[in-house]
Length: 266
Picture (cartoon, rainbow, N blue to C red):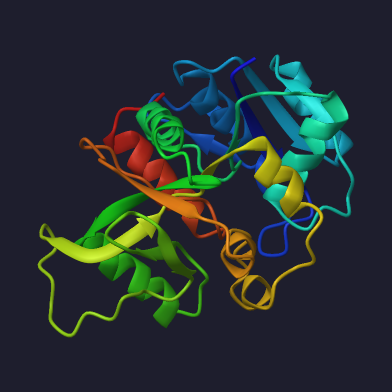
């Protein structure tokens, strides 16, 4: 077995309880749950051997099994998706080359994001984890800033070095840009896409570490790797005309549905 995708999903979300079961209507008017759309996105990725929904909730389990997904039941004590992925791999006794965490709130994730992420991790023998980043246009950057100004915790931004090694991730919009950026122009801000590819040993180690200070403050699980000195590789991906956004707040439902209509996604 080479590459396994795990989709962590919990019902008791702090910001949006029941989020995995929220329905999104596509361009044709069909309503599918968030977890179903995330599973559909995972199934579209080339080179994947197995897709597993990892949850601690019977409602999500029953719903996912009804549309044909494999489900691993995990502990309610998992503090984030990475811990849930680690537990699912352990519970099922899997020994893959790479484990991909496709978080269940990112149903618009294009298949090539994951494919390029896996290729990036394979190409960098020193990296423990890889995660995709998308260069923001001025308009995307403005949306991130608008969320923060409104007091909403929206997308995450990433800062990394010339070799792609992550320096920091934040819910704030970083780096600071001292000049205006036109809506269609490229900005120096990178949106972190909530997908991860782990080497199994690094994933197993993660589950043994206590929550990090920065991880707790920012609410970003990947910071635990940085706080432990582990190499996190940022892989720049291209949108290719696709729009991308995560479902973080109830207000994001209408935004995602509008994007799906614009992209003619069913």
